[in-house]
Image (cartoon, rainbow, N blue to C red; front, side):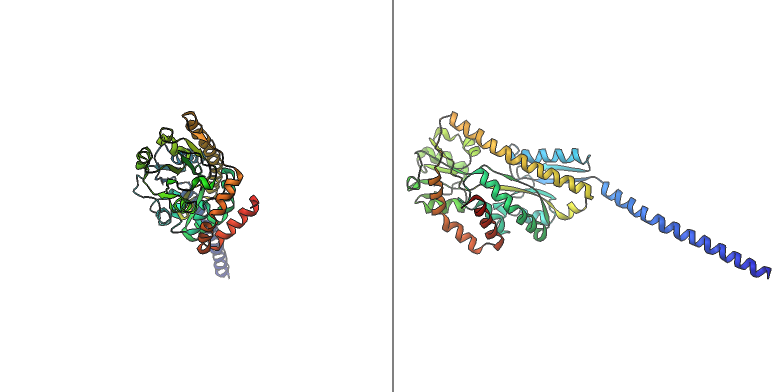
Length: 350
């Protein structure tokens, strides 16, 4: 009887000890997993950031500033090393694939430049869709959710921010106040849309490299240029041209994106910091570029270029005569692009 009692007590003690061991293991497993997760999430990352633009370009300067803010806000958890001037060997049109494939974790890319791989990105540079810098911002705000969706779901990357270029205007030897004044112009253009525009108004497009623009103006090969104010200052247009018409042919933008897998490796708090900083950077870049545009125009004016502010009638005339260019593009574009254009037209009342 006594033996049976001791066997029972021994068995009971064994079960109690086993229960404590199991409970202890179970209780300690979660903290161990959390600790491992915390260690992984707190491990610093260093992302290489690609840019094809030179170091003094406003997009490159913006990237450097963004990198600095990210490092400070994450206490060094995320460091970004910016490589400008195409130092990594990428030319631009392939960058959507480059970031998707993780060849670089972060890159700046010209929105219209990657439209060959994803047509919807071409919608923001349809000629004469916008009539002011402010309208350019409206168009991009409408397009942004569509861009976010296709970037994440189709191309495996997250857009951190979108930054603009100053809109392209017309620089000429003679005053240009109407479409009739544009007939016969010999104009240097920089893309297909610009060439189509000049053909539509009765001019002749010259797709010259930038290095040949000044000499071509000086020798009379061309008499006008479609470009933005920073380019005009760089080329000292006041030495060979007299007038500037800010007709807003197109307004290009750049996307700054991060590989989604790399982004998802970050803890939630760090992700939210990057999203917040991206929104702030976008606001700052739009404000800075609007200011930059005016400063560069003022430099040209101080050196003798006369700004001819286009009338509403002139802008509407340009929009009407190039309607077919936009319609042809939209015909084969993704349906989302047509939605963006319709929403934009409704918002600006056209």
